[in-house]
Image: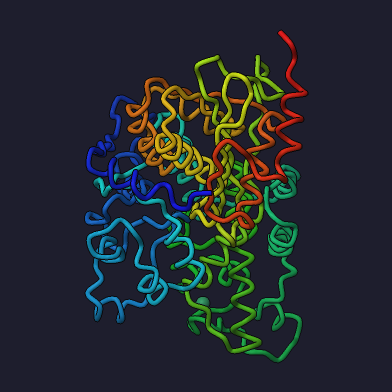
Length: 486
Ligand SMILES: [Zn+2]
């Protein structure tokens, strides 16, 4: 068993590795129609919607720019940052390296935010910072997604205009279907049917309470004020991933009706979650006297969002194998997989077999930082490639059970999202092989790699040559047995 086989290799290829800067260019060919054109022309849509992908961090100011994975504005201990001379994201990296300065990040940021920052994948060699469009998988702007965002924004803006909207059955239908947890949906419902116990309502019912808002003390606390229009709350909406500007006040149910009748489901879900967190914060203030910071509110909302699941992408029917198949005689097949846990970070596993089905090597790596399951799969791919080079494999067929990764790899143009930052590293590694490809197999055909990834915590950062750990032996035999004789 060898430990840290990557070390030597990293040195070798860092010397020959030149990252390509991907420039984000807005495509101007799209001609927006009447309503959207003014929206589109105004710079804020682009500036607020595009996000930074961190390369070396030198172009990104830590304040007032969207570079956090959540899409929220970065909020931190400004006084301390000023004292430490932290102005740009590059100041959060260890000097002269492509690693996060964990200590500093934890010092400046609210813990959940700090945890998400140190998971931002950095390119192996610092490239330039890139602007990307967060509404597509590859981070490239498309007319369709631009239109959808412009439309969402317009709907959000219109929702706060003075038009009167009634809550129709269609609105309830949207609410029940919103991909979020039940207690968030219930809160919206209570707000719309006016049974949230805000102070003005209690007062109307004859209770002797001060009906002013406890946050701003400058307006009566209505449902709309408490959840949307209080100056304190408005700041949160603006800093949130929705980047919502709430200008004119309407009643809560009118806002919801206008928003839900047209917005995308994902927007509806985020809206419900933020309302819930804001209501929770309001109660904390009133009952416990605790004033939550914007930071707390936004990271609570991000936490809720991450528990509500990832979009399921159905597989297209096609000639995809259910079982592991042998590679060609002179090829080595490397199956890899990632296991992802939000709190513990990701882990990777791989197994390499030759055309005769014999094991050439197996490896595990625990504690891989990844922002999402998909980025964990991409990180596993990059790790498997580096390891295969180190092991001297020249003709390799890499295999994944992650359809999104496989599809992204096959796209002609590299996008500018974090996924493509890792895949860009992978594309650069291709030159070190005589031949290398990526294929897709169903999960049932990737069981050994899956097992290795899941057990990486026990095995540690390890490589086995010509064998797999004893516990994986049965799975290897199962794969051989499942082979259909051709
Ligand atoms: Zn207020």
